[in-house]
Image 1: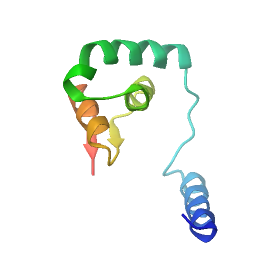
Image 2: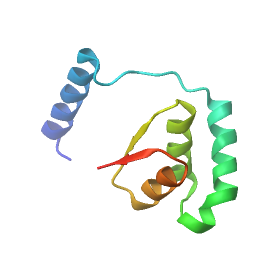
Image 3: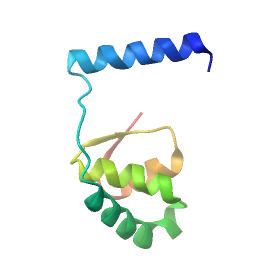
Image 4: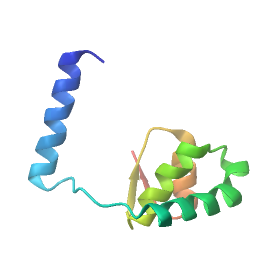
Amino acid sequence: MSAADATSARANLERELQSGRLVKKTVKWPMAFRLASHLSERHSSLTGTRSLDVLHVATAKSLRAKTFVSFDERQRKLAATIGLNVVP
């Protein structure tokens, strides 16, 4: 990613936050890590997810997200398995 691309991406992120389309949330990390541990034990051997994959999905679930956006197939599979709407 070039410096110009990074600047543009950051500006897009700021616009999305200011418009309310994206909202900053505070993560309750102990809850997210407990859930990640549970998901890992229960699903990693089936989905092929690794630690950061599981943590991303667990964080979304702990924040009560309804939709999970990812292009990572392992994350998508785990998110769908636990009932999140996966896009694209």
